Image 1 (cartoon, rainbow, N blue to C red):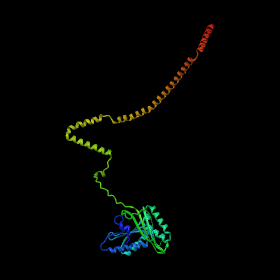
Image 2: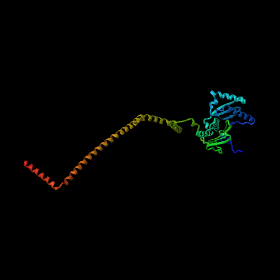
Image 3: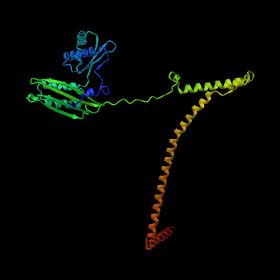
Length: 357
């Protein structure tokens, strides 16, 4: 007895869904045979279209057939002509009206049946089976698969003794129910006999959706329709408060006492200064500030110039003082004989001047 379990049947109702979605008590055999006829007719007619899956639904006396294919152009035909032909042929086969839908498979490298079908076509064209298997592994992993396993069994290479060849890459967790493992089986019809091809393709885990806890939020219906600015809200609040105060005054005081107050307020409003003067004063203030700001850099320049002049004067004075100090030091350091000679020369000059006079 074999110990293997079909990967799709093992996950039905948990991760995978049924290919035929209907329920009946009396017409079970009839519906089952109709489904088998529909699938057989479509696969025989579209053998080259890459049909991977055929889903059948029966809601309320109606049949909906969805064809999942990698080449939708072949199934549809020009202007949907071929779809109409297949729909009519299926209606004649069953004797009931049905709706035919075509859905495209965007990545055929991630579909196990299409990978097995492409490998079978290469083996039928006598391509080396090892090379074809390696290319299939590489393409699926490049497309984003997390693991793939391929098993080819039969007269591989045309030998007389049948054998099986297994190649795998990545990881294929067959015992993990949440793992999205796709399984495909097909046969390659060669001259020497049939070669069975099985493909297991792991596309990642399908985790259950986390149920979000409902958040109870009480939102008044008025807020949804009325959107008011902050300024408008403040103005309306002031109006309401003023109206409340006026109403309270009316209740407290009689009408006779209110009249003189109103007259006084009107007189005060007439005597009050006009707001334009305030505006002008307010406008003049920034002008004065701008003028003072403009005068500040001029004052700074003048201060800098005066500082520079003072520094030059002090430097010249210090140079003169240094020169004088050096001259005094030289005179002190001269010998006494030189000083006497100078004194004599001075006396002789005085005598000579007196004689001339």
